[in-house]
Length: 286
Image (cartoon, rainbow, N blue to C red; front, side, top):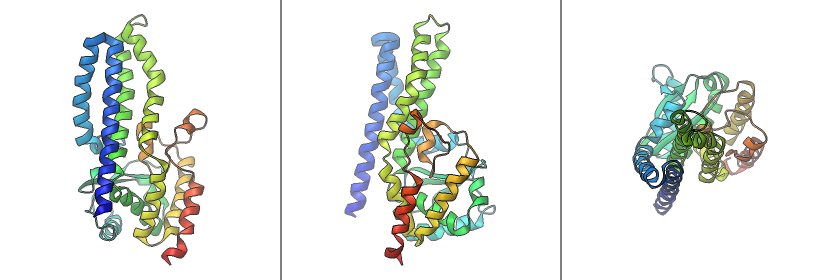
């Protein structure tokens, strides 16, 4: 009970910090565009966005990934293994979605365990064995159990919103001499890295390690998830997937590769280290 209460408080503080950061950033942009009136207008926009992001961040994340509801008749084995795992995890059954992409990948979202979803790509079902897929779903349920999904969904929604604001300013700015156009151009150059930084600060790599360990305990076989991670990494490299960069942190493995500046903002720990830690767990679960 004490652990659950602490987890709830931590998730609430992270979400509050993210929403407060969004409000402050929008007010700064509004002030740069239109002075005091612009700052007030963007403050009102931020308040509306905060409400929408908190209540609908999971829907936004699913929409951004083009996920569609997964019918039980189309995937009875996924429903069956998910029911087994949620019983062990002692959380409600999440809604299941499929992303019509060939790359093997998955993510979980939702503001709490009572309002959660797990989305898998069409490619992951074709690539992984049943035990490996069970390891992946267990990992995603661990994110739900650990209440990481609210922070992840809010961060993804904020990252996407910040980037779209840059495009909006450019669109309404008109020609290059317009102040809005200049601000929009600057936004496109600066806001995407800022959005990535916000996500990086909100979603620590440690949370992936924690979800790996918790998921391995749920399915009872760390090797299932370890093997799945190796195959997913290979699949992601072989089959690139275009996703909004703001949602990248939600996936179990990075959906696209990137070096240089992109690697600085990576929210995923190295697969090799994740696999090493999982394989060290085998004696403890034997």
